[in-house]
Image (cartoon, rainbow, N blue to C red; front, side):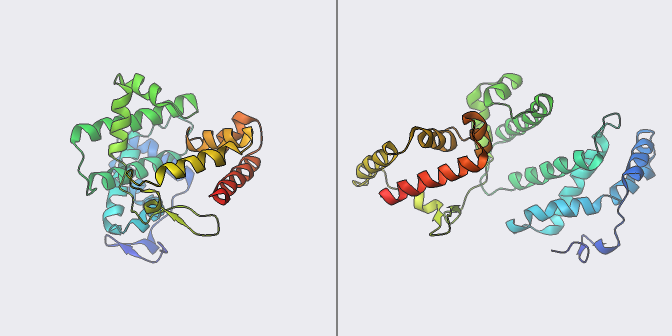
Length: 256
């Protein structure tokens, strides 16, 4: 969608003003001094920022007017909470706030109903995660989040899992230029008599891999690490991790 040529919520987006960074800083100082007109001007001057963010969610089939209005709420919250004493660009602070507001809206309107207390725990966990990430400049562990919140680790895991959106059975999970693997392909019958044969074949296929390939697959698919994290742990490049992972999966597939 070309957001400079559409009308959302009665707003002609082609006529929206784009503020320069110096103008934003001046308006923020006026807002902190209690100037309401500056607040309205800053909101209007950042509506294109909201439009750019909602492009990430257009594939969900949601009403764009609704997403735009929710995004504007996130924009207003970011304006009201922005600390002008910090050496941070306003847009850098505002974008995560807008995204967070839209994600909360999508979760709250999910067809699968989750209790209010569970959602509150999940949102607290996400805020705690974001704060710890900013403070420590790394992704916090679930244990660290739970300790900070003073709740059991299991409560954090359960709460975060409860707000994950349902996945379609036809959602692609892997494609390597050939046949695509969908979620439904990974759903099996535990009572299927052929399962134990598949397990034996898989163990044999993995047994034939090199120690490095086994470690890469274990870190990637059991520990849930990214290729960059695996590369740092093993001491090779991300490109090498990608090549070895692809080769190992290909050999396992051929074994079957």
